[in-house]
Figure 1 (spheres, rainbow, N blue to C red):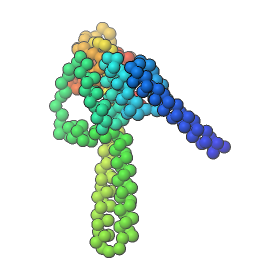
Figure 2: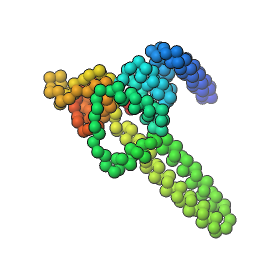
Figure 3: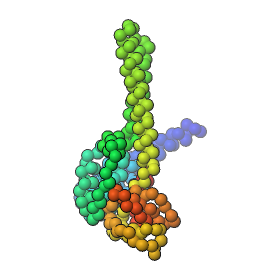
Length: 252
């Protein structure tokens, strides 16, 4: 019975993958023919199957960009970067998309540690750091085995030293993976989807407006009360907006 269920699971996954490939090819053809709205519908069908990738989000961002939909284009470019921070095509297109956004917000100065984290550690996603961990664990195990079976003190000393270095790098990369995962989970970034929205000083409609934001602006969600979200900008400003006027990036 277990074997039958496993076989059915494999068949279902294979059919789903084939269906996704077919939808992706069809969507790409529609995109090339400048049928961007129809292409988006096909890409969305793949997203609904929970078969996501940096390439899928990148193509969705491109399609929305062609339609001059600022919020969705920035949203999907940002999601693509979260899956693959090294994708230069996404980075370049995101720059162009952000030029269409109306809000020009200056970022607060970063500390040395924040700059190091942004410029180096966040160049890889936590999934990619996890692969680094696996790589160092395999390398360390192989070096230890070579040390165990090696003949001669010089070889043993070399394999022992390199296995210790690999172990240290393994622990370091594991710590970085844990830190990046926590950052991903706790740093609830979102993109403003409303064409224009008033940010209030409290989660009520009759509260005072503190500033205005426009479509495509990136924010961090700090808290939620009923249908309201407390947000923070990169310049340190905070306020409350209606939840349906933004869309969270960390929803996959």
